[in-house]
Amino acid sequence: MPSIYQLKSRFQSLLRPLCTLMARSGISANQVTLIAMMSSILMGVWLSLQADSRGPWLALPLFLLLRMALNAIDGMLAREFNQQSALGGILNEVGDVVSDVALYLPFCLVSSQPSWIIAAVFLAGLTEFIGVLGPSLGAARRYDGPMGKSDRAFVYGGFALLLGFFPAIAAWTSALFAITAGLMLWTCINRAKGILANQ
Image (tube, rainbow, N blue to C red):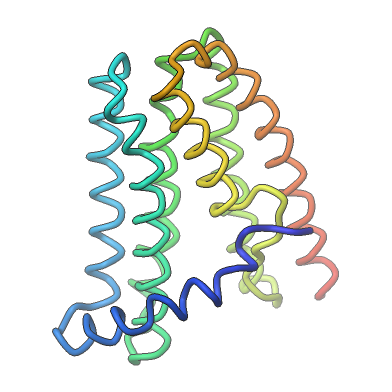
């Protein structure tokens, strides 16, 4: 199933010089992971406190791009500079789920039906949980789409940008999250099928 995740190798190539510089400066993969998670929490707090302002919504797409860059960098630091560890794996997976919760729950504040946002955030966590089950069941970590982490960032970031410029579009928040919740359920099924196919 197509996913923006398939562009990851090209994105990593662009970031490799910066990643090399960070490694030479003594910055570790775990530090980058923690920075990504803590900054996501702070961004979520800003969105929650100023949900009626345009500033945080306009900033969210740029922040999501930064978060994707940090996520790519921590992976490259771990793989290419011999920094892989069990702690790093835990921080990486937990950090992704915590960041999704922090960044996407604030959409509840502009939605007429926040239950759809809560459902989508739950399913986002479930997609990552099923994906990470792969190695424990003798398969690879699954990144199947159509609504993985990168896809969510693209869709929600784009909507936040529109929300910043056209606040009236908030009326469509629930519909958007209902659609993405359905796509994430599909993603869960695809990832589970991928694991089973490799048994």
